[in-house]
Image (cartoon, rainbow, N blue to C red; front, side, top):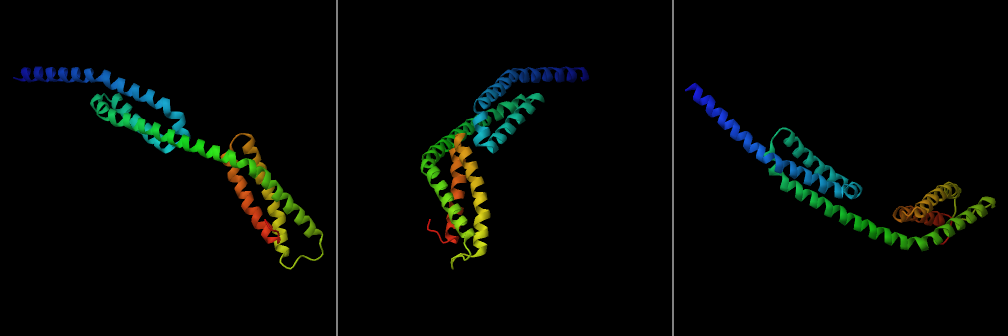
Length: 198
């Protein structure tokens, strides 16, 4: 009786192993396909949707861990969700890339006028600061603090404008316009404080 149950157990184990072995190939193929699909979208995803990429990589790692433990059934069970997640990741990255391209085109277009306007504003402020610094009496609406603030603010604006110009030169018009807008807003404030019309 004992011999028979040992024999039965051996047969069951053999069948289980055969079942597992028959799932090993498809499980291996599922992981390989997922890796190939993920590799195709990884760079764009890393740039535009890094959090989503991390989640998908974590899913893939779970499948690999299950495979390493010989749990091919688990790999096959998670394969469809993994494939869908990779597909969704690719679409999200592509959409963000398209948005970024549109924003870049818009910024590039706006840069032309801005790159002419901002230096004129800075020159006008510099000229006003120079005149007021030499003057013995400040106009009624301009305080000493406003003049001092304008002087220090102007140096900061020139520095930021230089960064904006460098960004534009390297083709990063989005950053260039962001910095340029900061300069423009601050320059407008300074001009008001010095009694200038922007």
